[in-house]
Length: 110
Image (cartoon, one colour):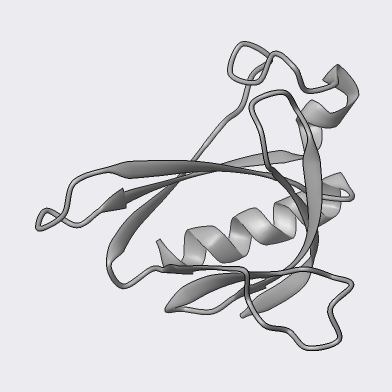
C-alpha cells in the first residue's frame, strides 16, 4: 500500500532511528535504510493485532523536540483477545504532507 523513509523512536529519550517502512494490508515491515537488501528488522503482523492511531502531545513524549511534534504519528498495537499485551510505536515523518498520506493509508486498513 505504501512505503517510505520514516524515523522510529528507539528509546524513551526522544532518539529517532531511520527505517525504510513498508506497509501492506497484512503487516508493517521496518528495514534499516543502509541495508542493500530489504530484510525487515521488525515485522508487525496486522492480522494478529488490532492497530489504532492516536494524537501525540509533548506530555506523551517529553523528550521530543517541539518542532518535531507536528510530524509524529502514534500507533498502538493490541494483541487479539487470545493473547495479552500491547505495544506503542512512534513514527516521525519527514513532512506534514507525508504524515497525512501515512495516516490516510493506515486509517484505510484499520
